[in-house]
Image 1: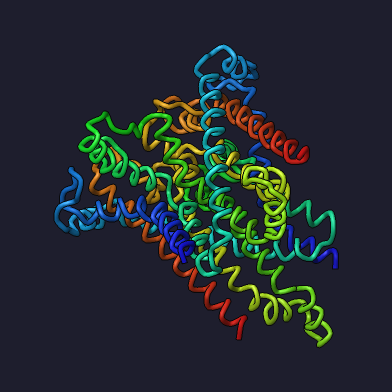
Image 2: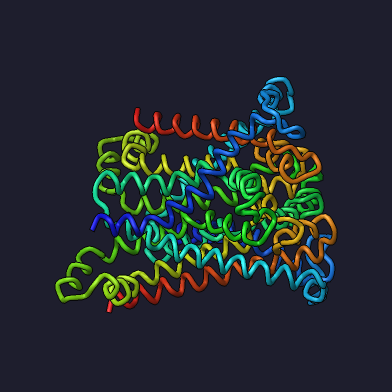
Length: 270
Length: 264
């Protein structure tokens, strides 16, 4: 029996090994080579210390991803909480609707927000005519943060809606009856009870944001550099330098792992 | 009474939050002119230009081929894997479960693409810049979605008991597979593959890295048109939205049908 189980797993294990793990070894190996001569070098690693452009991109990534994750956590948790009062039919409808952004191309979402919030977008026309003010800047960091909520809040909400469905409401009622206010209920009842769901939702949004760049590229090109965007530009644009992209990919991987471990540690401590 | 109105309002806000942005490219693609607050006129012109462009047909064909292949690879590889994980016990099972969930988190599309382009650009497997590379990359992006979908179905049908029953009636592994297990988890397989299809069809990030100039999928054409002609870009965006929407409608339909079947 054991042998057949192994055979069922084998194709996927081979596929992952050949097309994910093995290429990653190549990333690690090639990061020590020179793009033009192919000789062994540490220059690519030195570059990320010397060249402030890389540090800035790393800082941008951490701040942008942190901000996005925070916003998604806040709204996603509230939506999960509100969903307790939904009927099963409504909950199913909302969660299947919320799965939609996940499959949409980042470019389509960029297009949608240009029409909605861009310079000549309808929201800005409204703001300009009603408030006579500057309007909203889609092509700024805060604009990008808002656009990415379209992916992240629904994603976070789906996980939380599933978790809240299984929350024992009598715990919340008991706490309320004992005089706990809403904040105390969250801190002492809801968050500990749903800790695994919070942890996996936060990790999912955090890690997927670390690698995201499509929508940013479509909206602001290279003018808002992120680590992921620099990897892309070193891979497929005129600034072609694969070994340098490899180093950036490793930096991205280390940052993601540290972030995930930190989250895991926080989750265990609570 | 008061409370239920409040809830309805909240639900409407949630629905609008997703629907309003999605509607923008669609409205744009049908309007003659949209500079002010409201679009003006109704036209199919942008679709006509898009579909009559000579680059459109190859891109469409390619996108469909890639998405269908990614779907088939996922069915062929991930379904047995989910079955295997469901079969093994204890710590190994949870290790495999975690591994299949965490690996995609650690290897985002951009890193996946970066690894693939520098690994398969020489013999024995020189497929860099070809459609096969795009298919492989898209299949990998679909893994977690397919796995979750099939694995969840296997959990809900209590596959082990069913298989035991089949075994005691004399069914061999092959018969149990095709007469008991697959018919029971087919909704999970179908929903999983449709998500894979939809994701593949709209994928831009890994595609832009691994595909060469020879293999342009629809999102890559969209990227060019966004800087080129916003009208045609609106038609392509809307088309991609229709693909996602139809996948989701079918998934919802399958889910409903299966739910009803279970209750009867």
